[in-house]
Length: 90
Length: 138
Image (cartoon, rainbow over all chains, first blue to last red; front, side, top):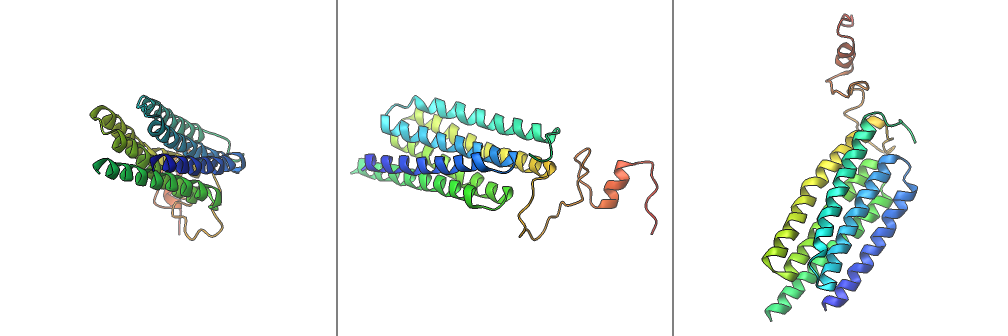
């Protein structure tokens, strides 16, 4: 049963990845793209979690730790860049 | 029997997490402006990621892995609101347009565009910008 569920969840996450990539490509303003990037990373953490279960190797969890850490830093960095005089319209 | 129970729990957590991620991505594409998009992605995305990682913890059930999974979960839950707040605040200063159906913008005219400080009204912002100016006469 778990294998079927893992496949279904991989499918759902792939769909979510494609949808958030649509917003990343289209998104009219820079903050839209930052939000899309953040969701992309969050979906990727989900991917890593599902792959950890599928492959029975717990080492992949460390990748998830590092990925979520860098995503947070990137979001904060982007926000600071925007507040400290990013251009008003892009 | 007990293994089947934990397998069902893992599967349920994975499915709910994946569905929430999909809902977050759908909201990101379909919502009309930045703040409503963040409303969709921040909450559903963080919960979805947290649930999938919780599924890992339930699946393995060893102390070391559970501790790591819980660390990832707390990290996601702690950082998602902070990042969303920072991006939302920055986007307000950059001047990202709100949806045309927005009913109320309480912050309009109350932020000083120069030093990003919040004031109670337009006049207060005006006098704060020029401290030596006399208050407006009525």
